[in-house]
Each structure stands twice: as structure tokens, then as C-alpha cells.
Image (cartoon, rainbow, N blue to C red):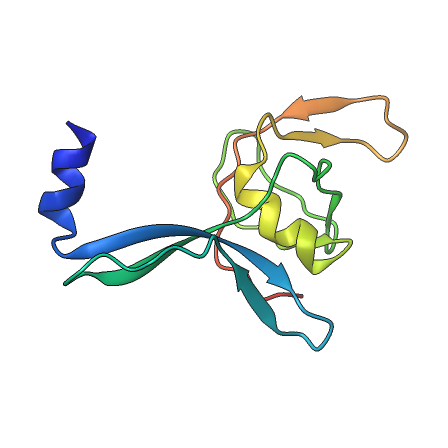
Length: 117
């Protein structure tokens, strides 16, 4: 079934997987298996990001926030580095933890636009 769906959604396309590897000069290199191209097909690469080796992101509030209980609001957060910011959409079971680690409150989080700060 999935093979038929792929043929309907991407006709004449040879889908290939590729890992994005960062370069020292702030560039990116795509690593993929070298295969001959199918006749009359154009190559299309699916990029992948390796997550299993990444630890939980360390996120903190950019400034103190006072929010009414149960209200939806937008709050800016900071990460230790850019790599952690990219893994935020995959994080689950968010909790707000007090500075002294005595209290924790589960929260629902949606990651918005990233401005890389």
C-alpha cells in the first residue's frame, strides 16, 4: 500500500535517504549511499537528523514569567547551544522545575518559530 501511495504522490521520483553532517565552516554535507539513478527518474533526497545520541535539551526561561494558572501564553526560552534548540520539537513530558528543584509542574508545550538565540 505504501509503495503505491509513494508512486501516486511522487511520480517519476527516486526517493533516497541522506544524513546531514555539519562541516567546520558552518556548512553542511549530505551523506548518502551511491546508487545508479533509475531511468527517467529524478532523485529526491529525504534528510534525516540523528536523534538517539542526543541527550535531553537543557532549556531555561529567558526571563522570569508570571502566568495565571491554566492560561495559554508565549514565553521565550534559551538553550545551551543551537543543536539543543533543533531537538526541542522532539522533547516530551515537559515540566517546569523550581530553581531549588523542590517543585515540578507538568506543562503542555508547543515549540514556535526559532530565532536561533
